[in-house]
Image (cartoon, rainbow, N blue to C red; front, side, top):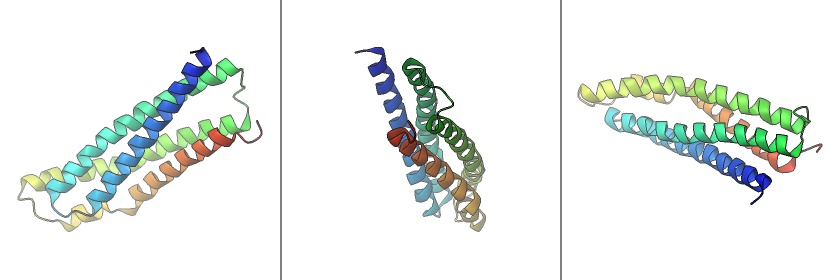
Length: 157
């Protein structure tokens, strides 16, 4: 395999890792919204961390191998689709991090409540279903989809 083929394969693999981690985290998040027992919510929110690890590794791989691929091909970072992709990558990481922070605190609450009798809690339900983390995480996902669209169609290239 050539250097180009290796870089492309690793870039695409990283993109799939990033997307798969994000989808896994989203599925677990929606599952947590549907449960009332704090122990179940804590377990589901705790499992999100695995998805976040995959998304994080994939995210770093996409940027690293993508930059290597761009350099190998002699692409300038000023290319519109490439600059937009980099900006969207930053946006997706920032929004995902900001959306995950309140869920981490919800997990802490769920773990505490699970140890105190594991009874349903309106406060926990409200924290898990809060609109801000939901919107931030959805916006992060939309940014990732927009990156994929730019990578496939490369407008202006």
